[in-house]
Image 1 (cartoon, helix red, strand yellow):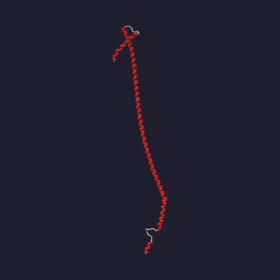
Image 2: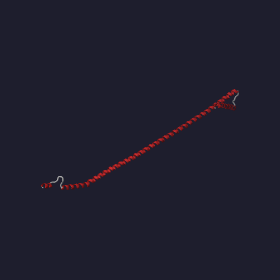
Image 3: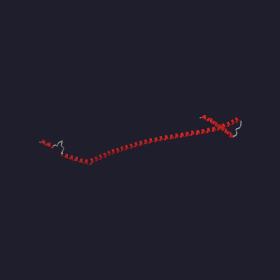
Image 4: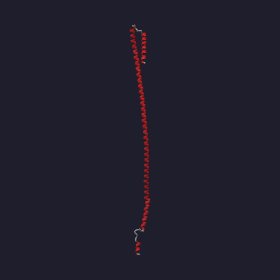
Length: 180
């Protein structure tokens, strides 16, 4: 029996004293209260702030990406518009160059036609002048020759003119069929 009483009074290595258990429980509850009252709300607040920053950063990044995409689309549209505008300007310039070229060609042809017509008119005038001079010379020589052949003077102007005109008319009638 002695051993059993001694065994009952000796503390158990597995089981702590009741005072230690109560003290541990009070300390645990006190620590739980402090953590739940002060530490946990602070951690929750920091967690909420960090979550908001991350979500805000993600939203900000998504907005920036959407803005960049919109700017890229706007840039592409402006680039396409600029290309179309440059093509239109180039086509207009080509059309204008063709028009100017045609106008210059028409002016050159008109100038050429004018020069040719002026040359032909000058040739016709010179031909008429030469023909008139030749007729006058021919008439004078014919009158002299006729005066020598006939033996009388053809000084009378009316007579001489009639003779010369008859001679030239005969000359023209003879030379006209030969030209045709």
